[in-house]
Length: 459
Ligand code: URP
Ligand code: ZN
Ligand code: ZN
Image (cartoon, rainbow, N blue to C red; front, side, top):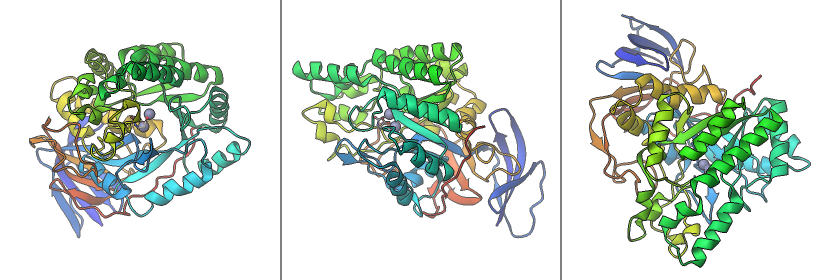
């Protein structure tokens, strides 16, 4: 199976040039100008298009039992949505709750994904506790190629890890060369604020944000980075939403703490006012940390352009408006948290970042492909367009004009948080390991083509 992608503009994290790409079997074998097609080669004309390395979403939920229900996507629907939006690899949160066995959870999540995904994938391994057999169990999971952990400082009695177990997890992670990703919010303060608001009769979706304000997030960031500082472990703050939390993270970085920062596309294009929409529509916009008042967006965009934030992810977590979000009709603390976005991230960051002049093309490749690949042990197999890299390629049409709608998206969820937003570009052709999975903007990939990508611990 070989393919020649001709006449496109190659865009990587650090360069931008016209060249052809020759793909053989699953790999890129050559880049150069005027490459000849060997016999039996499919030639794809990418004139007028950008050619990006496949995008990587470093934070998604597909199988997610949470808040009394389950996220709606299967690995088939979630991965079709991913590739339609140019994401060729995703990293799913494999998140046991406090009463679950880690090895059994590993079997459960990997079993759900096996044979179903169009895109490649891997997992961050959730650590909700650290018991006597945890080291042994995690060592087995690391041997399977899962080389990053996930801890929650929030969701007290469900996913949340206590401080002693967080400390033990980080000491172990440091010993094994594992990076630990963390949801940073102070769970005790959230519980107190939720109780205070509900007691005052403040039960609607708009009160979700005041129950988890920016200082509660900043406290979580300071808390996590203090544990990193004490254990010398390496960390990654997921879904950073606010200027105050950003300051806490940057202070830690300035002290020499080894920590990277992820923000989400939702925080860049949506704000707290969406959760105030009437007729309970605000529930569509409930996620944690919450969408913030608009002034935070400026700080996040500016940090992205100055290289202070490392990745842009989605935290994709799809719950239907009808039948799931409405579990919290009388009480905002029962609204399943999450805003689906796996399909929309690349088009939104391109449209509202590049087209508005806030970010360069190279920077969006860095934020959504090369940095996630480097941080999570996928580089240079992923996140690059180089000989020897997997042929994960996004041919992107900057002339496309469209509007986001749940009527046309592939995500298995009954609404879009970005309904009606304009996009000024989209992937026209996408390959995963050399196989075309999107052609002319239509998903053509086969479930099961996507593989679990096994990674090595960092040295
Ligand atoms: O609201 C969110 N973020 N839902 C998914 C679970 C999590 O906290 O990442
Ligand atoms: Zn989270
Ligand atoms: Zn998440």
